[in-house]
Length: 141
Image (cartoon, rainbow, N blue to C red; front, side, top):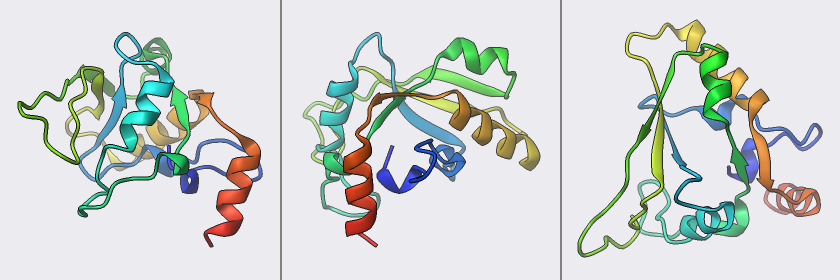
């Protein structure tokens, strides 16, 4: 999660962190990756629409329990979607753990907003540093 997607006061993920124009949220399945491995992989990805790498220092890692997503009935599907290219594509690294949280087809706008809010409430920090967040927020205004 990019530092701009975290509320500086509450230290919680903002619902906007769970927004994607294609109604898909990219994530890693912990069966195949650790939080540290996921964070390191971010530094091998290009920024969206650019040929410039993301800075992993700008990111923190959260986890979501699939069971909580299902129990809350927020009309999201979780799909294992490994990325595998031979040879590996620069800026889009291979990732066995890659998965997607996808909104169900024909989901109503109100349900999308509800899903974003619930995902922000049920996520847990795996890699997070309050001091680093405060520094990033104040130095990059």
